Image 1 (cartoon, one colour):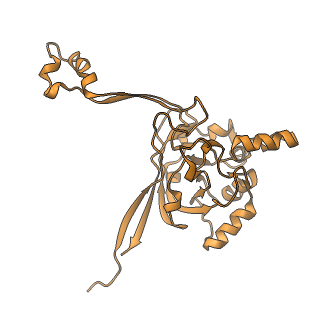
Image 2: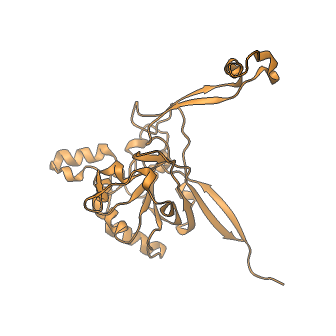
Length: 266
């Protein structure tokens, strides 16, 4: 008799839905989705078939279809190095989203729980080391590191764009220097929210603070996922992440249905 434990595969959707009128982007930067119902399109269907009338169609219905106007950075998406700067890896041309290696996008995942940090806090390498020690994990090359911030619980609320901590330059380089090439956050941005960075800039006049986590790609090229969801449902490690982006020629990002794949012993 085989007494080996069996496994059950569990999928966790880490993506948010594209939808109208939700606080997920700065004002005016959200998607616009126009919905056409079956009864709205019957005449359109008939145009393809001479002599066909709407009443000839089953229930007089055409097809349901949507017209969408959106940015490549609306919804859950994977940013390419091209979004961050024109170069990566200290002078190489930065990759666009259609050039990101597919093997980067299906790898073991690690979750760092930074929900306790206040809004606008900039995570340091020491913070990462402390969290890795807490969960008992040593980073391996190509692991996908997901950062659970206080922003995740506020998605869709008016303060979402300004919520959560961000990853600084040194923290980002800490990850990429260990072979990490895909990271992710449930916040609007990998960096600290702009409203907090603006205050630090006014105080210091140090422009290096602006988008410092993103700009770290100029030294070591990497990608990151923004607007993740449900990270609190994940274990610290022991799962796979699938985050293949939509292939858009020469684009700075691609939308992604990000999924965590967890095999549990039963």
